[in-house]
Length: 209
Image 1 (cartoon, rainbow, N blue to C red):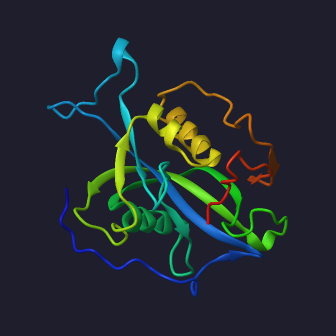
Image 2: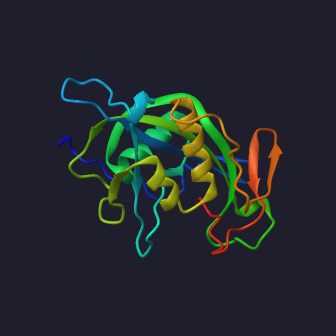
């Protein structure tokens, strides 16, 4: 754990970046590779790839969990935005892999039934290998954190985009073989590298921003 001084979380959208009508969002899947007492990666049973854990955060009044993400502001690049959100929401610092796990378009929380792009966000999600965990962090009162196995993470993920990002991370780390990332409950349309979530899940949870 680290006892670094806690900076205040950024509030408001005065510096928020937009792409036409879309709010731009950055986030990450924080992960760590479990190591033995000598600092060597621990392997799964049967000599499989090293064991990986991912960090998820809670939100008030929900049993499921999410990965840290938030608005990309105009005084930072997208990697800095993803790193800042990880520090503010999850209290971790680390190394961002600049090759994105994926890009998605999401509806906003308040307008899930609208088809207008005015209520949508474009999100870019990265992998972050965690190097430090803070003892306290800006949004600790609303976001607790929890290290989980990939199997548990799939069960806890609130949205399908998170499962797709998790799958992309595990494929990159060679923890699993490449698989089709789209969930059977979704219809995904490729639009110049971005993906629009067209069908809500059973509880209507399709929002990112």
